[in-house]
Every structure is written in C-alpha cells, then in structure tokens.
Amino acid sequence: MNKNDIEKVLITKEELATRVRELGEQITEDFKGEELVVVCVLRGSIIFFSDLIREINLDMQIDFMVLSSYGDSANSSGHVVVKQDLACDIKGKNVLVVEDIVDSGRTIKRLREILNDRDPKSLKIVTLLDKPSRREVEVNTDYTGMSIPDEFVVGFGLDYAQHYRNMKEICVLSPKVYN
Ligand code: IMP
Ligand code: MG
Image (cartoon, rainbow, N blue to C red; front, side, top):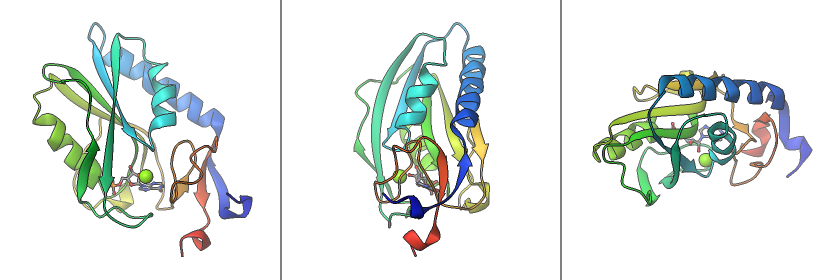
C-alpha cells in the first residue's frame, strides 16, 4: 500500500461517522418495535456494518454472506454466486442487507432475488455508497449513505485487489494503479 496510489480523500472520517449515525437513526425509527436480521455482505461492508449496527437501537441478529462475482478487480461481471451462505433462516424475518457500494447494480439485483425466494417478512437494503451513473440494471436501495461520481474508491472496507480496506477515509484510487 503506497500513499502515491491515492489521488484524493473523497469522504472524511467525520463525514462517514455523521452519515452512518443518521442512517442508524432512520433505520431505528422505521423498524420501531420490530426485530431485525442484519446481513453483512463480506468483505467490503465489514467496516460500515460494524459502525452501523451500533447506531441501530433495535433487537437484532447479525449474519454474514460471501458473494463473488466473476470479473476483474475493478469491474463485476454480473454473474453473482453465493460462496458462503447465511447461518440463519430468514423466513418471516425483517432482513436488512448492508452493502458497501452499488455500481452496475447486478450484485444487489441478484441478492434481492436470492433472499426474496426465502420468504422474509421484509427485505431492505442499505448501501453506504452509490454510483448512479454506472447503473446497468434497474435496482432500488432503501437507504443510501452517499452518491458519488464515477471514480474507483477504496478504504473504509472497500478494496482494490484486496488492498486498502483498512484506510479510515473513502479515497479515490489513482487510475494509474489499475490502468
Ligand atoms: P455491482 O454488482 O456492479 O453493483 O458491484 C458491486 C460491487 O463491486 C461492490 O460490492 C464492490 O465490491 C465492487 N465495487 C464497485 N465499485 C467499486 C469501487 O469504486 N471501489 C471498490 N469496490 C467497488
Ligand atoms: Mg469488492
């Protein structure tokens, strides 16, 4: 990991903390009196997930899912496969899926189909980041942290080729790294 790989900081620690708190408050309000199963989509969501669940003041279970989409490191192919499934049965449960970023939309679209087939009571998606200009399939998320321009970002859980996940800010990766 090299400092020169980073073009600029896009979202600071403080901005992230504020937005995560707001999302947590909104989710707490929307699900008042209900229980949740909060699903972390590994690995990119891990930091957002661990901050967000502590801002949600509701009874919850947490669970994890690993998806893989065949493609190179900067693009998903849209062929999304479950590599590790949930441990719990979500039938009749309120499910909140926590994603890091919606890009083409293919991952979320497929994930919605997979989880809806299991008859949850409700299924909502929260994504930290959204790149609307990159959308290839129509999807809707229920909660979005921030919309960002079409730039490849890393940090706060997001990676390029598995690097940079531990950076505290969301940063724009210098295109020379992947070009
Ligand atoms: P989609 O299926 O094209 O919407 O892709 C979503 C997945 O692509 C995310 O969960 C990320 O793993 C990855 N991804 C898309 N854009 C970025 C980015 O700017 N930085 C890091 N990962 C990204
Ligand atoms: Mg990724």
